[in-house]
Image 1 (cartoon, rainbow, N blue to C red):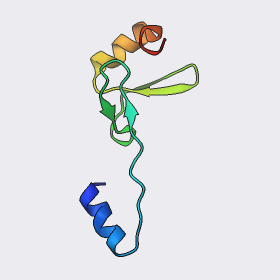
Image 2 (image 1 turned 135 degrees about the vertical axis):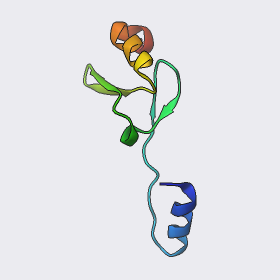
Image 3 (image 1 turned 45 degrees about the vertical axis):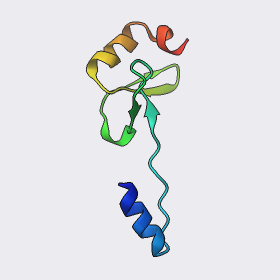
Length: 67
């Protein structure tokens, strides 16, 4: 939801929490989990990615990116 719409709704008494964001641990880019199909579960955590390339780098060596 855009920030402008959220502000307009707040003016009329409706408060909407911003959507949670995730961090692409390979590229460092902020990702909206609601709008990507690029994700991997690793050791009980879900990681989201901005591209197939980043996802593949992570899958090949996850410890490099999460320590």
